Image 1: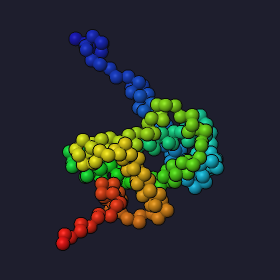
Image 2: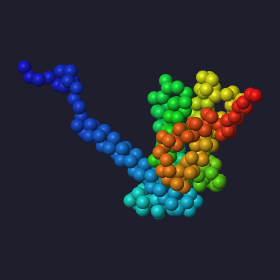
Image 3: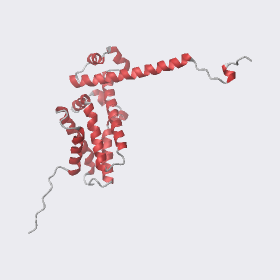
Length: 233
């Protein structure tokens, strides 16, 4: 008896051409993603060195080892390149901090707060160039950043929202005083920012873990001197 057709025998035939096409498509997708990330990395380095307003796409292309035209294959223009750099880096930081907080979920409040601060500090420790860019843009009104839509803008504020969530948890656990609680998130991020600025000017002054402990200690204890109790006569 002869063999039946693949359809009649119930056998599933894989089209080699279709399989190869899928592999080629996935390879192209990974290559495109890797190229876009290399462009963002080069942009970060060049912007940090030349300044946010002065950097050129030619310099970015040279740093990435590609032609300028390749940049336009991935980003519409210079403004989009800057916006995407900010969106990508902030999203990465949020993901890193969120992962740390999930691991610290069952820890006492102080340890959870320390994990949060250390994660933020460590992210920027690994991204000195981006930290420099962030600090540069604080006093600049960049048109490309002003045009970020509300959805993207809210993504940029997620790390501040994480600080607010930490504060709410501290209030719930009675680890923080309720007076002036609305100021606590800004106070916490203000101290973190001061530490980041200091580390940018004086790299690796202290280990990140030690810096995080200092921030948390200051935040929880305050800066006021403890009044001495007078001895009774």
